[in-house]
Length: 492
Image (cartoon, rainbow, N blue to C red):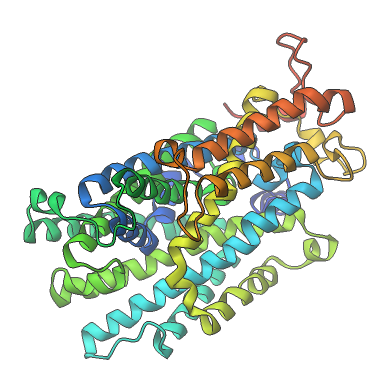
């Protein structure tokens, strides 16, 4: 293979150019494995445990299914479908709706702050699992904020960085090995729980700590927690989908992998928390199946966190290279990965309390991601009619019609702010204060819908008049705006 071809392949994998169909390495099952590995982590058990705080297992299972499928589908339609079709890096694709500088702003909000928080939380989950594992095999007195947990959490971040530094091929191998084994572990956990308690007994258990007298409000909070879990994939799955063979492959594995695997883990966490009275999986795993299985389960689940860390770190670095300045773009891939991991490692060492605020942190992410999903669906499906001009997308900022106003699209940013504010008005994640509307339709759905409507309406009203965004003329019938360069990258 010629050096030019190798260099182009590395550039494409790392997001510098769109991926041609022949360059995409994930088929249906590879992408399903990747999504399963991303979804199966201690955070799934922790979300299930958080669900048990508000409702019993009967309502909790319904909340897990409803919340996750809605969040995953809306996130998938707004990111995976376009990125899988054209092979574009997710935040490069966002230039078409937010502008070049606007996409940078969204990246900072949705990825830099949130991913660093996620990496720290997942690292601490890994550390607590190792601490619990040590307690099982050596009668070590566990300490969730002790030196072993913090050192192990830092090690997890370093391990994820090493794998990502080697590129997506190593990620594929890691996912393919770990994901099936973790599905088996989850199945065994579920079997052991049901061997101690009948399913009818589990369904009859009450919530651990329901905060409201109104059962509808408690149930909707449980749905919202799980919808936030579904929407939490928004910043990451687009850059995974661009590695898939076509847009069908980019879509369906999310339903099987992210929804199915996450729902399984959350149901296990829900039932275990309800039966054992503790929502922290690193605690209740030590009481399931005896020492031998506890050691195996904690070990596998600890490394499941690493698979999630690897996937979200890879997608974050790919996006950062596209949106950063010249100096960062010229920096080596390995060095950029290492520098990105410094802050999460510091959080693990000096602010481990972020783990205990996981539930609040998770729901706050939905206030942003649900609005972003609504804008993405409105823009790609209804305004652009699923047609994207790659010449415009990769053109120099000064010449691109996606420049909007000084690199920002005020219309999309206005819709984002309105969607975010609507979420917080309907449901405040910090205080759990909510309106009557919340108990009927959640907060994520109104945020998603309102942001989409505002973006669509203002774009129709103003964008064509101002010459922004190269949107197709709605009076032009079925005129195709896809040029030949774009067609070569699309594989429907």
